Length: 355
Image 1 (cartoon, rainbow, N blue to C red):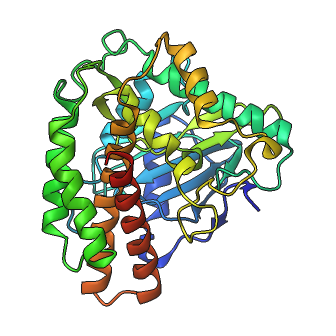
Image 2: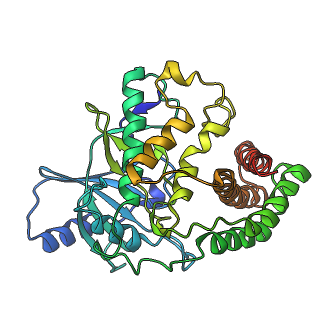
Image 3: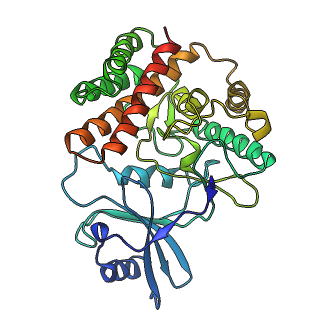
């Protein structure tokens, strides 16, 4: 089913930690004494292990760094905590932050705790199994939430130093081009996929739009990273802020619109091509963009294909890295081939948009 509550499982052995030490820390930090205390793990592919903590009548979510040696720029959960704390009094729905612990001696790594927000997770943008009226509201709320994020005054919430501003696309294209070159063997999709990426790495730096708007961007804004209120179908919380930064708003918008260009039936792509949008209650891409633009006061968008191509290129570069590591590490060949097919499809689709 497309829409469901988050799945909880027993804490995986690879992610286990001293639960009594966590209990003692929280009791001291919050000046409380807990009679009952239990922990389960959220099932899924989060890069930062995520757990549900129930302490008496309190329900919280704990996110921690994974154990082991990490790249310095990876798994910066302190940034997740900071950005959600900063957004607490804005129109962007985020969980309430409870505490941050930078002492790895408690449970083995840094971690933070936030309120648990109940709600529906929607895995596929086609919103299968939901009435068309619900889907219509879900998409409207998604567009409004993205607009609310981009309307945040970063200085007033203390995020004007959250990241380097300016030259967003030039820096991003350079970064992901370098990442791709470091992991391009074997190339996903063979020569065809490689040629598409080479074309994009040459095209994108020379065609960056003049619009230099800077705002807080999520970096991975899509239906699967949102929680929806079960009754109203409004966005109840925006999740997974680990890629957030100061950047250009249309990068988030274009990333959110990628499903309009990918097939529904292709494994892993979660696209909308082939879906009867009107029958499902899903707006057209133009209607979704129009709602977002109205909420942000933007009259029109120039060079829309550039923003789409950039977003697909960035995601293709990320997936190429996953694919190459899986192949070189003799990981599941079926999964590696699926990831590789997604990377190649994104690269070829992006190249076609700007050719």
